[in-house]
Length: 161
Image (cartoon, rainbow, N blue to C red; front, top):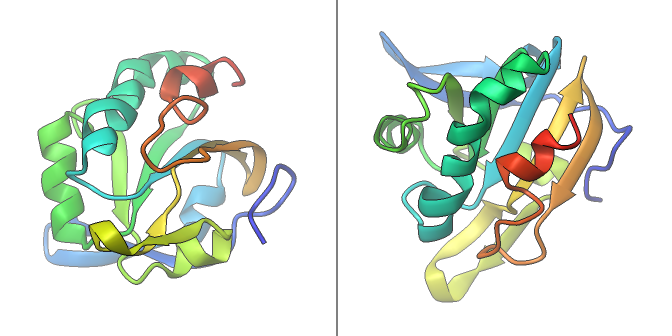
């Protein structure tokens, strides 16, 4: 079942690269305050790199002005890839945390996983954008196509925050 507004963020573990290497980030950390949470199929892919992440980089300050505590991107990649991609896209400079769902378990728990064998995608995350307040989804929009970035763009979510 796909996550909907009013649903609680599921428990799970994500990854990031810290000073000592990969470290676990429990989703419970994302259950405190107002969190913009967005997910995408993969780092270094066309729409993710050229449209989705830039829309949140452009909107980051405006989200904070509206009282958002954290902006977090989740992608089904390893933490080393997510770190390199976050650096390249300007996400780190914009204060956006990019977390790896390396095994896809959080994505599956959200009901947002999909496969696209022709491009080598298995268990990837559908493109989405959401506002989570104290662990509960207040709004979530999921794209119908992994190549689209309209309802999940930063500017679209900003209108709902």
